[in-house]
Length: 272
Length: 359
Image (tube, rainbow over all chains, first blue to last red; front, top):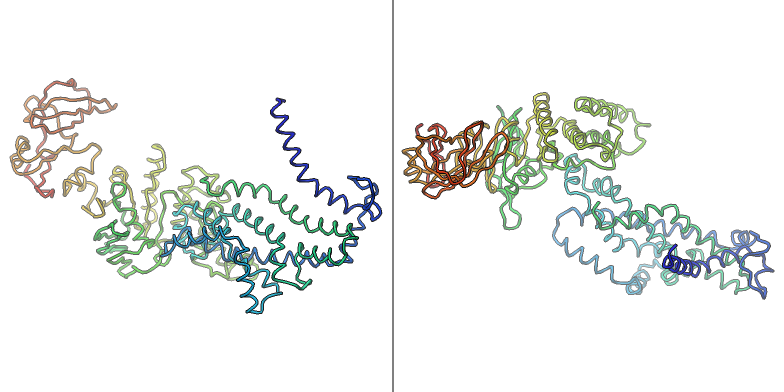
């Protein structure tokens, strides 16, 4: 092997270790019995691994509840986002209507505005509607995603206009074309977007912290905060087990969809 | 012959440009018509207007005498075969062909997956669709390919799937947009025969849109020639070729561009040439020592079965002549004399319109 390759591989390995170390530590601590966690020497691997912390986290804390909330919130957000985004992106890509360019410009402009800018007005509006501290407050602000619109519009633009015309001649409605032609043909991009969306909202702490106070509505990251506050830090084992449990669904999802995910990103905006 | 599908004074504007200007065109029951024009002349727009994919800016579209100008493409039940075939890449060949039937014969609820398990009506309808698809697939030799996706088919097979999808719904008319342009020469000749045979067999009125005059001349019963958004002549292939109604048509039709002699010098070929333009196809000119026209050979190109000479006559007009067979060929720089059969001459007035001249 050439020296250059050795050096670059070494640097990549070093980077990987730095990124992965906290996770390894997290999983390692979650597997250690209580007595092993607070010791003076640093041991990367538990000498007597145990699943007791996971048992505690699952039975004596609200973590299952947080996981369920996370699934409800991210699932609802994704379903609503697709329900809005797929027909809208199809219309922007394949229909001629006044204000079409303006609409696309507005979508691109909206991409540049971080959510934190609109969070306060949305909070005030939801307060007026008495929607705070509900599932709706966690879900509705993310229904229309400028990112999703942009991504799907680019993907749908790659579908030849003749194919859309063929579907019209064959008797499909515009909504039918959006869901039965554009949606399946844009599937790699849809999956890429779904992973972005689920990851972002599963991990989001900012908005749940603002919009909800009820622990029964807490999403996983918000729940971990409740947990930490209650236990005031001395029950680290179950905390780490809980943190592992909320990370695992995302990692599993990504591994399962990895191939289509990278494929979807690679194809975005490219002609086949 | 009764009119099946027609345009009545249709104009289509995109912004300020007129893609189609005051076009009237009728497709009769059972006929095979070709719409022939150079690319960008508005023939594809005309096709889309007939199919219902574009709405005219002015004028009407009639189907069986009924005004369908505002009807959707699906409501008109006109089949359209696209240049790219436009097969649904995510559906199998069977699903591609069955799609128009499913859209037509089943409601949105009935199309939901699993309805066949609970509803005998849906089961019966699905069995009919399956039978219709198999029948069309047999006719187009697609029986073994029904489970494949379009990406796994050759170009010719894809085209047959597109034909099947268009024909399966028993359309009121069948429009074909440049069906031969994606095929190589060998397949092209076969497909011409196949489409002709399909027309005879089904009896639907066919409208073929093409820029290729040999496709139009060899396949169609009638040809409409379109130039710059207007229909300039409608007639049988022989009429279009032998009696072009204007200089524009005469220049457009023919494998080799027609020779045009301006009024005056043209008088040497025909007495009427003193006041008319005279057109003569390069195939109709011949070398002859007694010929009335003298010209100098500028270049000579050998094309296998024919040789094309480019010449310039003493009045400075460029001429072309196609020679077949084993005549002794003049060399560039030689002066030759040219003669033509008077029956092969076309006279055109100053406005470009045909004026018949005695042979």
